[in-house]
Length: 479
Ligand code: TYD
Ligand code: MG
Image 1 (cartoon, helix red, strand yellow):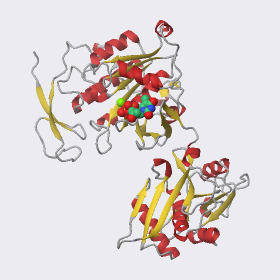
Image 2 (spheres, helix red, strand yellow):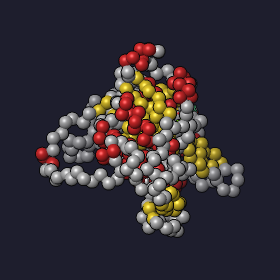
Image 3 (cartoon, protein in one colour):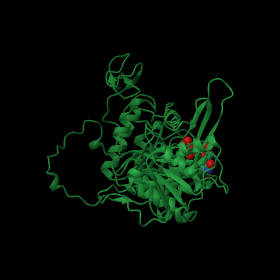
Image 4 (cartoon, rainbow, N blue to C red):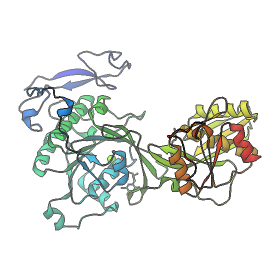
């Protein structure tokens, strides 16, 4: 019987200490140490290929190789039928990669992964669940209207498709993996797994870390991609030590407002692609549906122009999106005016209001101001400033802005309209969606000397209004 040993772990960064500490010397957080029972790796317990198991597998020493001598076969990527997922991953699933998907409970992580597993009947996919029984998963699979392989024997005889395993011990999972030889493994969720090497309870820092390390070794040695679903804590961090995020290749966040149907899959870290990509889904009664043209859903259907509503041409990752922004400005009934923004930073809203007051002379100090970005999404792109400023004034003056007009520009503190990146893409998207006019910054236009990287206006049908100051915008709009 091995002697049990306990250690203290920082719940925030995973730092290990033999005694309790008030402040973590590694990450500086207070009161994060929790005692966990740890047992040293025991050679008798089977592991993923026991020859390399445990953390003492340093026998094989690698030699330094000149970078030009490293042979590189084109990174093998599996293209899934889910185009949004492919985009967020940087062009498909990379062989041997470990991907972590975090998100609030009930947002649809299990649905997304099960849908992925069901949508590739030609591949052998193992869906390991420690959270639900196989019948529950089957019920969910019935709801999801993914293209499924023919029912019954065809599925099992061909030996491909989606396999469900309800198991939480990593050693048993690896046994099943060795038998099945799947092309892709999905684990729902990492917090429910436990490894027999470690004594502490599932979900504790040391268990999560050990299970992830075992799955990482498996992924790298067998070149099988692995997806891990991870819980997040109250403040939106992925539960478990921060090193979990360092260990995996890709961290995706599945987010959205539970009261809205739209869900956003965001890459937070990606070793194989851009970390600013975004996938948009719609949660329907029959699973998640990809939204390939987000602008159309984010623009609410209306015919007449209303005051306080503008459209902004924003960019999320590499993808242009037209988003409706709404403002309501009304005289405050109480002493202190209310300021509230949904989907937009309140401090930035206060800055916009100050600029409009100081530079354009609008008296907004005694007004309640409410801002809303429709669709329940959050925008951080500064190009939305100009549209919001126009919406605020449109509501304040009660003059509607023509519905075929959109905006893309950042507002500076002195009231200047600053240039924004990728203006061509924004203009092209606005034109594609039938807009007739777009306000952009003059600094996005070619300057006196011919600069080849500057914008060429000649091939756009949409009317481009280049402005350099916020006052000009209002003169053009409201006369
Ligand atoms: P789930 O995938 O269980 O969330 P997570 O694994 O992130 O906790 O999603 C659960 C929610 O999704 C639940 O509230 C019901 C809803 N849902 C649908 O609207 N349609 C569906 O087809 C499915 C399967 C779930
Ligand atoms: Mg789940």
